[in-house]
Image 1 (cartoon, rainbow, N blue to C red):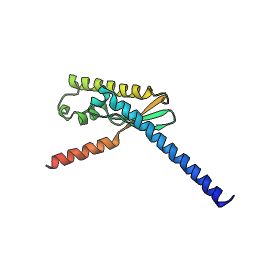
Image 2: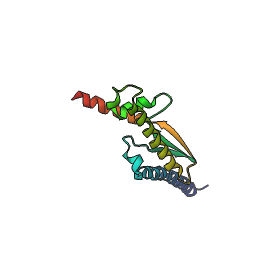
Image 3: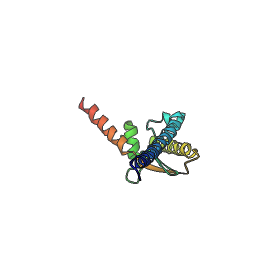
Image 4: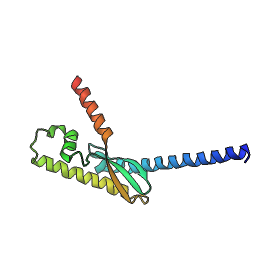
Length: 140
């Protein structure tokens, strides 16, 4: 194969790869724009967002995981509730609201014709940023 044909082949493969990367970024951005456009989801103190799309599965950020309880998550979102008893009705209300907002975010993403499944992933970056903010505020 001549040098010019090899160069052309490499350029075509590179262009396809760049196009594929750009499409994946566009898809994630589009889904996140849909989440931001929803008044219920966008008004919640924690912003659920699509982290990535792999095939027909969208991975969405979450405050909860198997290792982090809902109450632990909510105490970061609503620090004023830390002093309340575990059985206080405000905890129950906050848990229901988080569940409803998370379900709504999942439904919005699932409404996309290319998405058939949603996977939830703990938003460790958000928790890291919250710890940094807390440390910064306590330093003053």
